[in-house]
Length: 295
Image (tube, rainbow, N blue to C red; front, top):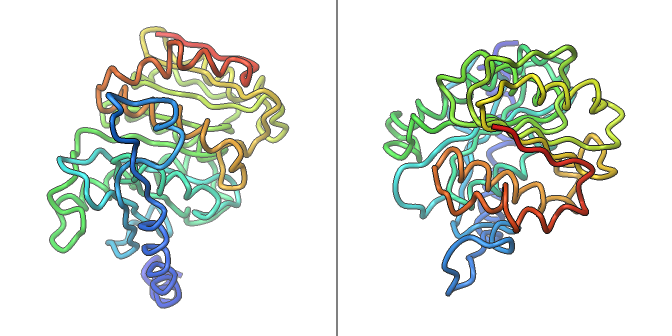
């Protein structure tokens, strides 16, 4: 079945869900405390200041089955974009909390469904780059809610498990087209990412038995060359799903590091460095079995 056929079959039910989703997302958006001079641990650990919307009506891309784009309704200026891929057998619903969270902090985010939930990381890398191209195209498409609002020069990629492996593969092959990468609990055997030149945050779980850290995330991180801004965050006793929808107990922590990484390296806002390498980060040391920075 083609992408267009699948879309036609699902469109009616998905649009009704979208209407509800838009209401819920707008209601859930919160504002930062007035009087704050800059970002704080508290402000990065919750929804950001923007109301958000989401939509699914966009041109088909052969590299992925479908997608939802989340964006800030009331943000001013041009928006940076983030493409996010799910893991093996997963769908958008397993990781889409990242879409709503990042949108409240000022990003346009596309959350993908792969053509086949069992696709390998190589196909997910292609899907992520297609997601990046889709976001750029939405910035120029007449009728798009994002028409005239996308900064095509600021794009990041993220992904879980095989989606994380896909993010690393895409960053390795397409660093010139990207600004940052955040793979979480990535799965990619024998990964060599020695040509990544964009800032990369690898998120891992100490107790991950699906993609054991010693076989996946840690050698992935080590293969990223010196001179590339990089960080390795390993959550103490964390499993394979620490950054997914189901791990809401870790959302404040995972979200804080993801937002800080994008703000620092994709937006160039030095106020966020303290959350990556400073007292604000050191306060979390008890939660990590390993936290390593390299440049």
